[in-house]
Length: 251
Image (cartoon, rainbow, N blue to C red; front, side):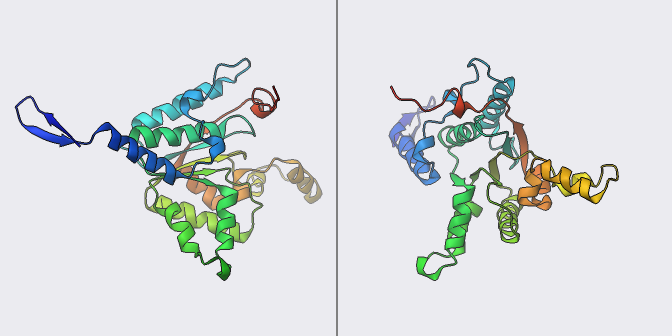
């Protein structure tokens, strides 16, 4: 603490910079951001490289505006980053998470969708001595949750029920949720096909098999609809940066 003298002559104790740095360090540790992604701040999100799609610049601006608006003007809503693989969704989402921690003092948590479901399944094994509630409590309670790669796991009734449990808990508590997904933000294919002209069963099955899977297919239409209330979609487009700008090289 440090003593600060006010203009009226009175003195007040204020936290020193070192205490702020310690608090931020503790928040970053609790966020569980994987080492591979700890460099992914907003400042390092490049929107100016040759051939960059303009959607990257717009997505960056939306993320930056979200940090400025949080928490009073965001109303508990989050962001849903959509787009194909390698366009920078995870980088931008983690950069947003880091900014909320360092600039807004938010309590945050990173969850890989696959790892989270795996941890929940492992909690059913008595030998692990970890309960499902222990796995899910921080997911339910944290101020800002980042779910990376939503929809990656092949959908089953258990997956749909688990996603519903997580999203409904955060929706009811008005908690901010940030999400990335590779799947188009659309309802399930079966619902969309109901609005199409009548065709033969065989032709419909063939067309269904050729269509790209949607987020509604992967998490269920009820939860897809819920996301529309929880998150504002931010679409990123372009080529896979892992195959071009960020391709692994030696030397």
